[in-house]
Image (cartoon, rainbow, N blue to C red; front, side, top):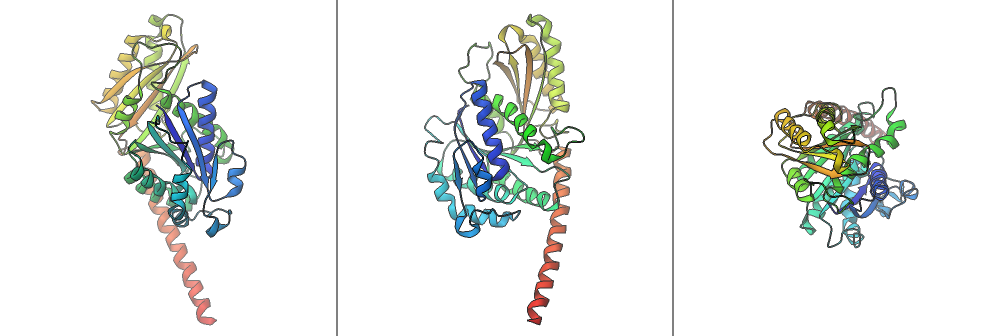
Length: 357
């Protein structure tokens, strides 16, 4: 899939940079162009991709803090300038656009839905969101922001691929300590997804192409991605159980949104050397995913990759019934009430002060 990536906010910029680095390292050549957009100049300075500062009139390059309403206002004011900066990022060969954002901060959660809506208006190709949900310990304001942003993103994007910050964090590791590692894990998994159908050395017998990725994603508003890998024998016949057990691990413990097994549609990709991938194993894995997800739309295939391992990537679309997502929305709703109550208290105190003055 030839994709253009637009990172919005601090997390969006860093993940976009990691995705491009992974694409270049692996030689996929799936990423056509990248752009990082932010209201904070310091967050853009260290990035090794094209950048654009927005909202200079309002926030003078200092960011919007965690104010996602201000983030939306700023993006709305400068969205035409952002669209103008996409020349060369989105080209005639681009098959899809991904807007990448952390949904807890102000610029990403507020600006990403505005940008997605404008991209949908201008381009005829699919526009997806890659949204990163804040971890449980990242604070109430971030939970509230993410809940509001997610509702809008789901409405505007063709599909929203979600990553829970807690999903791939190691025990005892703080979110801040884990950010770089999480970004690398996102890049590796999404990198294989984007590379599906690319002209890579070695041709699989049943290679997944970009149309199958697009057809899977269009089956649901929210999506999640799973991944696992295991050492494989040189002979494909010895790897049937490797593929099936790795598929189980990817779905049951490797999803970007944990506790997500039901879906409207799914795609199963076995990545590895052609001689190591058993057709029978891939078909058995696809059938198991079909049964586990209760979906009749499960596509499957392989992806040629130079490795002694076999990796399995699972894309699930239409995952709104996920218990993890339901728990997150409940948490976001509760946090939103607390934030509103705190703001009302502050407004009341300000009113009292105004009366005194």
